[in-house]
Length: 282
Image (tube, rainbow, N blue to C red):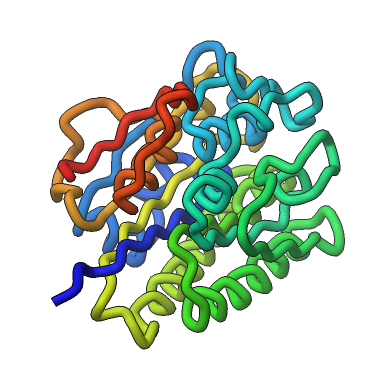
């Protein structure tokens, strides 16, 4: 019997405060954490609690002093030296990778991007306006397309970015509308998980699922400072080799990229000087 094919899905939900997860129903995120874990992540003292630096650390596996994304304008970055995991997998291993996102610098040259330089396949959907409703519509379109790709195509590693929660926090604060945005993001996570199970080859595959946020928010909305709410992020994960229960060590954002490679059974070139460490046992 042939070995199961390893696959990884990373879902990045921007700007979800850890305490909100205890206040609203998130059954699909709960299903991931119950099969594995959900753990807080402290943003490094030298890293601004902003999307650009934090997502760069998540997807490259190196800290800010290496990738040099210091804010939400990525100009002057070193992403050509320290590329994202999707581009690295495609370039170095010939693996099909997939990225879906609606925030411009993740996939376009706007504001010094893209963060993801050369993924094997991508979906980019721009928000029609800078409103919570427009960002929610963008997330919906991204989810629909990602569901199609995950069901019909065969990416080894995928990153799906949902940005409406963060934008709602900025525009409306972290009250009812923000909590409702978190509930909708969880429902979209559920559809992505269902897409994996709907794959015709699902029984022949081993899937690792990682869900991660980049930073928190102040109660009135906004981030970038050093308050505990702003600098507390989180990671949830499940899959082969990932034990159920709290991780044995404190996790960092840079561990996500390392775990993607470990879950795929791929080695990272030692010259990459990746800072993160996989948390799985195999």
